[in-house]
View 1 (tube, rainbow, N blue to C red):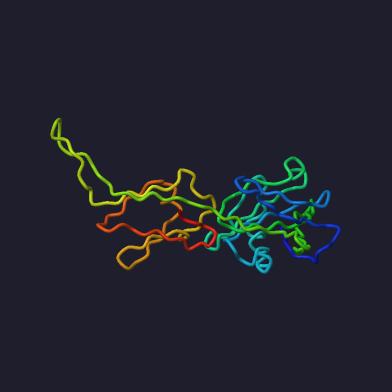
View 2 (tube, helix red, strand yellow):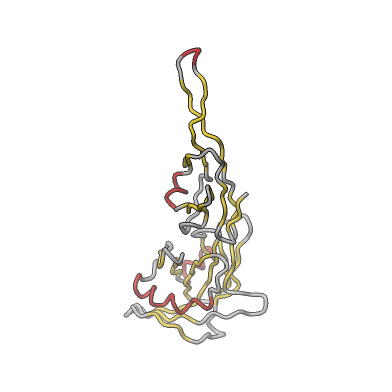
Length: 220
């Protein structure tokens, strides 16, 4: 499969990528019959400037229909192919993750070869082919205690750890290190696997301070 960028065409366009606050759905406007590729990048990046570097990644990993496919985990790039027939049913697509930026591209596909041609994205007045989606996360940090003793001698004692509880719905598409905690002059990144565990324990007498390294991820 070959993937290449071609000049924008006013008769073949997807535009006005929109996210309604509180929903997990993206919508856009499309020329009739035009297929699309929805790309996910780290929050706030100049996604239009990065389109060209995605082409070789799409050639390597192929187009994924019906779900997002990770093209570069370290750079937080995901992609999903959306045929026009799928777009017609829902006029959009469910999010793969939040605290990121999405870009919608119009494309055509040659059925015999599978080759893809992507129209260079453009902006039209107030309508854009991309949107930034922020996410607010609340992290619960408490001193961890354990029960010791038997019968009337049972009591709760300090375990020497802090218990950290993440939201039950982990961020899809989360990039390792987007959240970190600072303790004793060092910063420890939170990985996707740690986030999925929902609860982790940190051995310390001092409470860890959690920070966000992603402008779109707001800690409360």
